[in-house]
Length: 171
Image (cartoon, rainbow, N blue to C red):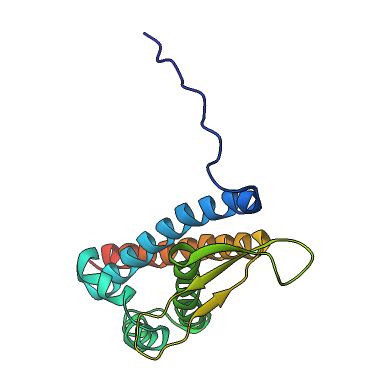
């Protein structure tokens, strides 16, 4: 028995946002995969569960780096690999914050700044006396973020695999 495919619904967003649909959709998937490999790597490195490793997602970039890099060094990750990992942990945390702005801030169309309507974001402050966070991204900016998350996914996956492999060969 063949299932009948329903026609795909039209986009529900205003035409101004249409160029953002594909890059944002790719960002959702690629970020989830990068975050999963980050948790897998941290769990492998620290010996905790992936659920326990989630606490590292809540940390600022510098704090996560300060906790993870000494453990990475102690595990035998060294030289270029350690330097690359250290740099990318910090970048991952910063890019994760950028992704959160894109996903959780309000999207609106700025009709007053130039000749054409421009999609932008506005993040309302959660802390007392904090400022509104205004954002302006192009679809290309978002694609670049997607590509970086793909690189983080590969990097964290490699290090998780390498740690498992080294643990297995030392038994």
